[in-house]
Length: 319
Image (cartoon, rainbow, N blue to C red; front, top):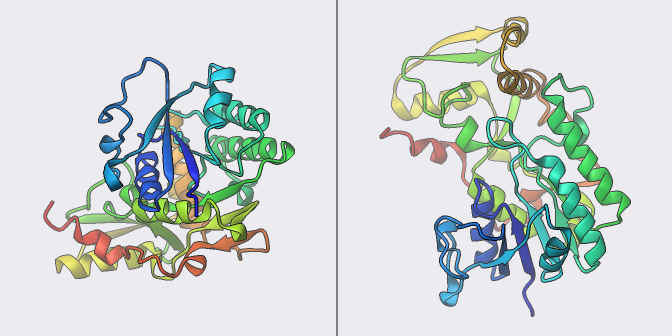
């Protein structure tokens, strides 16, 4: 059976390089969009070895030129493939380019051949965030603008709600402004018992690629909620304490005190604080049931041996 041709936009970025690896592992012919005259670090010729890809049969991902600023070029790139996955950044401490995807939507609509488009989401489901605090709500509003354009253009699609990337939320025990485990003290949000979903980024990529040609995920949102990774912050901290044999000094922060930190903070910090508030105080990742317009990834793909957070935290023991 012919494998799917997959174009990954942002294929050398944080989640994009993992999507490239996962796509190649599934045997798909995989393309990375490259801006013209731009050197892509770690890529030689048509191979994407620098993206961490498993180069089966000596073949890696192929580079295809395209740019959001060149509509015709973008259309030609899209015409080469069956599936387009966008993995450009939507977080404010990196580049924030979500609305550039509207140009990609226009190109996909004109090309007329794409069987599935997965826009850059991979976090909180924006459809659940109409109540979100400013200024962080802009992230969800922009994702919904892109969704509206996709649906109005009648482009077949799948949305991925991957919740909390472990690289940003687990090793640091969900502490802000660090990626490493605290040595002595840890801040606990509220009572620490709100359920959160933590995901190894490699598993995010694996589940995403599994969904791209699955009829069960067509025009639906796929939620990544593997049961062992639905944990409260207190449970996460407890796993770390069990691994290290050390007890951390815990300070519980009320929602009022937490939100007070937004006053006088810069824009990026306000966005981060707002998102943390919704996740750890409101439970926005787990406070709703998945409806008929959604599917849960670990139920769809039980063969995936996802990484539990105990094993993930093991990586930090020697740091």
